Length: 389
Image (cartoon, rainbow, N blue to C red):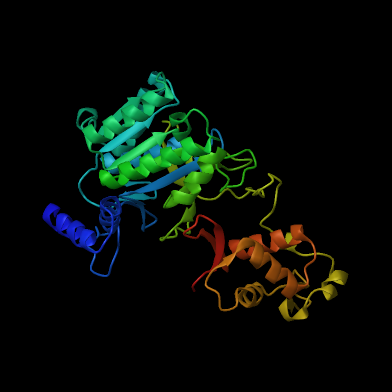
């Protein structure tokens, strides 16, 4: 390879390019992708509801409000990686246990150990001494943010983990709103994932708005741009049940939501969606799953475009309802992907809906009924795509 590079440099020099310019071009050429470029096959460490997740050489994000089960979910992931091949809705892709680096920046040493011995290891269903050879738990809460980043690099280089979980990634920078530092940090994490063929999973809180894609600070924004996928943890209102939902992905969408309770032993166990659960919108206000909530008074239905209205007979509970498949199919047109604002403009124009709040409810119902779904484009923007039957 060195001889080939020298030959290319010589050819460029003969073509009249400066030595410095030719060197940069040779270096740049190493990053070029062609149809003949050999690249590693895409490889995933885990599955959730049978769908691949936690890819090698990439970033995964786990988020949620405070005390909503983020550590519970990371415990499940780690347990599935190092021990029992299936933990709740998660399953390890390969048969062989994985090496995991758990980098805890938030909790006390006592809490880290208790979570490991009382939750992760019981879920992994293995002997503690054996599991110790697979899980490398480091508590660096007492370190400075500079030391934490330096130690993380050393740990990845030394332990060669398949999966790295950083909880909390905000503790690796002095200021989560300092653009340059945050950009540099995410670049370092991506470099670690690529260089050491591992998945780096970062845990970060949501902003107080409650929007599942609004991660904290400039750091959260940068993570949204670079992460392969994201999972949002939530505590169900008016219930002790917790949930985990994939809220972004670049490839494999996991449509199911994992609901779980904590049993008397302090371990998560699968359950179903609470019957009394009432979701909130991005402003934290309650919405509803009841179809009646998406109706308005019958005398105002005439203001809407009748092409998208279904009139029901007298025996029906509702006198009318939206023809959501037709409305959103027409709004999407021939586009495979549409931005949120553009879709809103199209739907409101076609339907005759005038109020943004009412449109938000109609969109929510379309998402609930799996007519459309949200995802992220390659630039990290939230977009809408049709759901394939």
